[in-house]
Image (tube, rainbow, N blue to C red; front, side):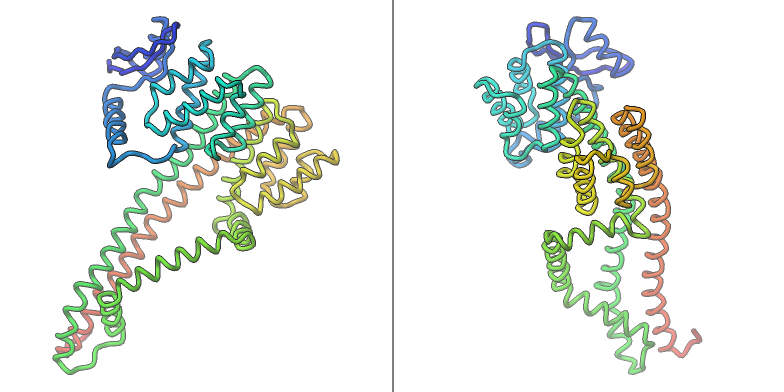
Length: 410
């Protein structure tokens, strides 16, 4: 059986570290609980060593992180939920989390929150004061947990929400790794051919005094441009990227782009599903923790990344205040998938809207995963074919010129 390196807390609040043998991570956690400990982390020995090496690099000046990431907040949320669920007071839980912090910045953040809590502030207020590190969704979830006396449960749900969002991002990132590598290799191959190989043929063609085919002239021109003006091309590309980013800050431009993302023929179906899954999971989580529907919709609208759909949610919130419900106004906007709207209508009729919203999120998460797999399965052969066509064109252009020089049939 593998060995697991663990960090746990005793009932007295003391941190313990060690190694134990177990078949799975869940088995290691169960053994720690049988020993009367509160498990914080349990990782297989190899993974723990890798994580330790990463933390060691992060603590050195060269690799030190200068900010707190969402992954840090996710880990802290899970650990805080575990400690509070075990009955530790909030102040002592933060003391333990500070000692377990992955970086000085995380420890500094936790220290500020602890000091505010010690000064009599509510946890939600202390978190809200941390200069935008926590979203309004996160703060309102904590506030709802405090009001309902279920802060540990709310923290667990928050951690699960963040872990699901991270799993989706990691899935997309992992799926895009090979296509990105393939694209980089393709670009490097074309740049090397045009910038280093093609210019070597130019003196040969010029010395013969014969005209070269038009396609060869185009390749030679591209090679000269790459060799002489490559630096300028990079500057132009960087300037275009900066200009595009600047233009996207304009609300009108961003609105048009966001509308195209969810209504476009090629990408609309995928992006509308992604946004619907995010909307449903966020709204369902808020409702399940006692936030009113109107307040929850306003929070969701502010956390939406797509301004086109955020506008529709704002309109739905206004209709909701007039007593029209949630599903009917969503259907009238025409901006949300019909399946999701009908499921929401069923949830309203049965009085289980929060459960139905979570079901909508699960459904669209699965559809997004399948759609991404299909798109990437199609993208990879297309990229290979395009790369082969570009490189083949360059090679054929050079060969046709060589054959024409020696009056050989093409």
